[in-house]
Length: 179
Image (tube, rainbow, N blue to C red; front, side, top):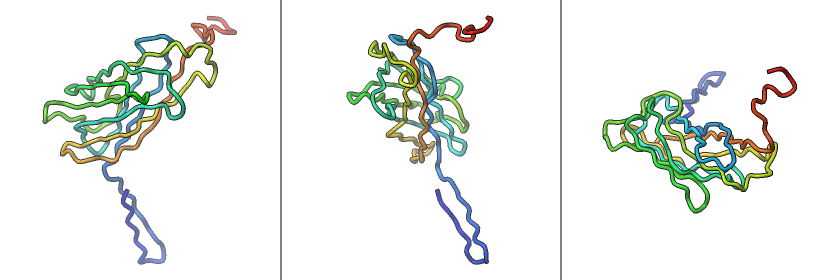
């Protein structure tokens, strides 16, 4: 962020210009314990720049996440010509890389999902209830480059993943009322 101030008058005016700002956001979802098909969105807001490549790690904001990433699937609406890979790291984070082998391919300016990470929830979640059944996932170690391979300034935004446990009843809208 560049701040330009004019202090020549009795009042001081300033203008903030955000250079190269993009937001990488982890989506929110609910996962069944022992599931192998739960997905978490990776959203990108890049209103001023096209994006050529992204790499990031997804980690529990605090504590352990009890999740193992197994794969990554691109969103065809925003990243059709891209390849996405996701690998569980020894430290428990999930390394995600989006890239294209086509030198002309970019993620155009806009906002929305660019990929989904497929997670598997472990059996160690049994007996976890209430707020303890939700964790925050944070994007860390983010690197984003524009169409000229220049680094952009990424701003992370965490997402919440909740586990459906402790006798959740479906459909929940039937509890205490008519269906």
